Image (cartoon, rainbow, N blue to C red; front, side, top):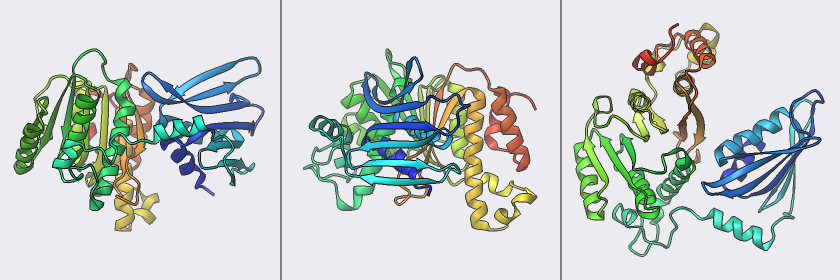
Length: 390
């Protein structure tokens, strides 16, 4: 029974978890704490989840962002504990793990939803953009009416925009706080999310920002530029051009690339790395490059079927991207961007620049993976001067 993993992630990401208690270690010879308590906490930088580790004589704490907290909670249950009690707004759920790692769930009515808890939950569950409140850029883009009602056929797009803004809100602590922030959106297209980003940072939070959207389609750039003028978004600029050829900045704080096709995503990642971007948000698309390269006799049962090979190639491509970013010194996470029912291209690579030097361990892991599949990735070729030598 593996559906417990996405359930934990959903409780944390949707902020319905009130408290979780993980207990009963599987092994005595382990470094894990005998008990871990998880609860949401509001910090100056936003919502985090606090992991409270109970040792014999002391208690220690660790605060994680929701995406990190979801991954960490799942890992603790997989590796350390036999029992987890998750108290959510909807139910109390007891997760029991057998010695062989098989899971069972017992669900009971909620016991911890007091008035204060409900109020806190409801406040957290509010979207960044609420239906019923007119937002000028959403009205102009045909997603909302002038009264603030979301058109029925645009509900999926409205959810996507809100999900994107939630992801952005999580990364804000990693951006500079005391100066203007520069953001580049590669392959911006019609720029729903670019306008949303500007609205959140410049209009709602009143930050000093400059955003540049770049796309190859001249008619799209003309439309977006006109709309930015109409909205009075003075620090939002749209340019026509190719990602690989763009030289408009020497430093950028955040790079966004959503559904840039094939190696255009890699070109955007390479630009971000060379600019020293603090944050990278990338939703890959159309990963064709490695499809024609992958070769491994042991994987013939997968690679001999076009559909399976295509899916495997996409996963391998994103694994290569994430690992190369780790080698260069970024912390990377794979985040579910949109529910799979809305789009199959729902994976987002989120990377934060760290102060760590080039990671030799990640390089060894990467080269072993690369060589086992006979790969020669564009991103490695583009960043060769920043990478260790084989």
